[in-house]
Image (cartoon, rainbow, N blue to C red; front, side):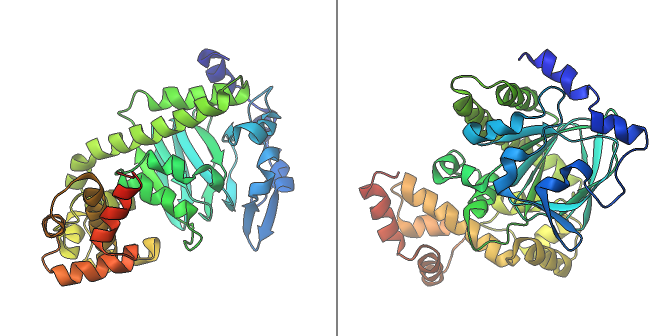
Length: 348
């Protein structure tokens, strides 16, 4: 399939969209034709990971393409327009890319507007709803089982803290799995192109399509982080309140940043920011800073022969006894043992 064909198909009306325009849409609070694939938990619909191969694909002529999940390990579809989607969550990871227009979502109780060029990545327990959309409001969905994010996949993102931390959390059994990333990719010319290529491979798979899709996904996430980092300075001056902006700033300034400094920069009071981080991340500001400092230490232990005291000092630790205690707690070994182990098994 060529991308020109894909774009024409995406904007072609589906029967469900036609029904919605004609006033035949299901009552607010139900998912109509999608109910068969959902369970209910109170007022929340839950889409099961085991049903991914039955997920509806809202692209005319390719409605049964979710069967390709069995050998491609993803499902690619478009968001159905002209109708509201009630509160729901998935047992899998979802990537949403806005191809055109604007989408209003409520994510974990927060009103979010995502616009053309935005990429929203949601972990498996993110509760969200989607407001009514118009013809020009086109959002593409890529659905991925949690098993997609194995350790081999994660190595692609070593040192890209925003994404690597997120997907490491996807793998963790201890996490609440209710986090999401909103990344603005308007300045990237390649992300839309790669997402459309994924759709072409998914709808009409060929030999090697699984590997092609995997590589495109890796490139999309790398390019997303690049776009995010290049815009960081401008966003900080505008005092943007996005959680991902705040986390990125902490990532980049962990060796010296303080709660008051970050709160002032992003237009919060220190107590409000502290509560926001604890609620959304499950960790205090100081715990997030400490995690990032220790990750920087670990990377330098692997990639350099600098003295441990020099590495610790450069990452913000002036008290070596405190540093050794924190490192031991996180990695269950001393910095020297960590370095020797990584070197012995060729993990540098």
